[in-house]
Picture: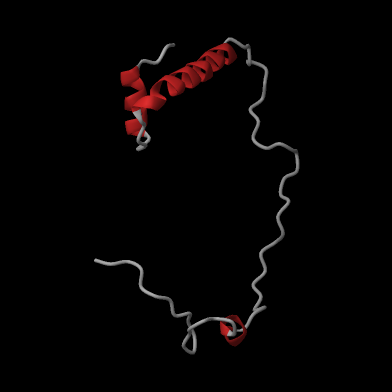
Length: 96
């Protein structure tokens, strides 16, 4: 499959990215190489290959969740630049 200039712009529009005109030729070559590789992979017979869900066979390597109170409010606010008795105070950054 060969991608043309219009299709590159359509893909960029769908991905919500801006592409400069000077980058089209490079992108077209790179994307055509990727699509050629994917077409080659589609030729492989994978009927007896199980889908890979994880890289190893371990079921769960996470620790169990335990609710602990390791840091008090006072300790958490100790190095804050500004705070009140319970919360960090930060400058407003969103304007209407």
